[in-house]
Amino acid sequence: MSTIINRRQASAMLATAAWGMTVPARAAPPRRLLLRGADHLLTMTDTPRPKTDLLIHQGRIEAIGPGLPAGDADVIDLSGHVLMPGFVDTHWHMWNTAARGLWRSAKGGFMPTLAAISPHFTPADVAIGVDLALAEAVNSGITTVHNWAHNVRSPAHADAEIAAMIRSGVRGRFAYGYAQDVSKDQSMNLDHLSTIARRPPSNLVSIGICARGPDRSAPPVWQAEWDVARRLELPISTHMASDPKSAASGGIAALAAREGLGAEVQLVHLTAASRADMDRVAQAGSPVSISPWTELEVGYGVPPIADMIAAGLLLGLSVDNMVLAGQADMFSVMRLSTDLARGLSRNQLLMEDMAALRWATIDGARSVGLGQQVGALAPGMRADIIAVRVDALNTAPAADLPSLLTHAARPDNVSLVLIDGIVHKRDGQLVRVDLPAIRARASASIAKIRSAAAI
Image (cartoon, rainbow, N blue to C red):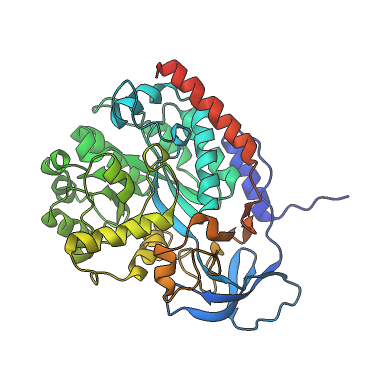
């Protein structure tokens, strides 16, 4: 029997080989796939459409409308569902996922505990963290991730995380970072970054950087990292104004003075940012990622979402990390975001639930530079799509679709997940991962690390 490999499969094999691992060629999507008869179709660019079909061809949305002819397409019946874009997580430290819930130890709270365990992560350990995170991402309807790799201890660590992302078939950006215990006057490995930045790892995975920036590194360091990223035309992400001390150090003003902000520079948290700093960020066009659960859990405080809305910031949402958050649940992140904004402003009508849906989809995609590909459902967009049950015990009946999705739905209501037209979850079950093997590897990894760190 002859084997025919198409251009996309060949590109996938070449890309994965570059990261020192042999992985199976990415499965070709079916020639056509018809998602039939969803109760609601949410495009994120217009009003919800009732009883609408969606046709996919070669990983792209080909047509949307009622009663589309099936022809030779495979058909999936989605009655009882809302069809919508997959969620976009805009900031996620995936390497430490196996340390879920290990936010304190005999060493102290989150920061001292992370400092104790991070030196003991090998390339294999960070890879299993990414494997576990991406499996949970798909299960909960997250189809695009921003892998904020801030424990890159060697080139092999970066290569292992990238290989795990390619292997998963999940869309995302690998943000090249630094080792957790690196000094403030030491840069990330800019030579290795320059080597891997010369071409994208795959058609689904791109490269950026996650830098410590003015708040957490010396001026010569963050300025050099900004300069290299700009020369390589890489997007930049950095934690800023996370707490009052950081906010008072003037990092945002320092970035603005050096023209270090812009659409390609994402700022994370801004929990303690002043309104003047938010205005600087909005004027420069830098997107902002917030992670309300972990911002509360780590003690940064309450994210000033009402002020962020008033400043006109482009917002994206994040689960941040499993050490603190415990789970990758974008539904709960949307709910907390809306309710914090309303409660702190004492104004129930401050924002619509649809705003949080936008932050989790189309605005999140725009904030990581993928707004032309994903985050909305329209002909020509990549087919990153989820179907959420609207006839489950916890979702029916519902008077309002956005409220259903932000305040009633849960990850277990996600029954179908497609990424680039390929099925990753169907009938509520993951179809491309070996969960028992991932769990076993993750358990062995964290047990070994805890022993080495004596916690």
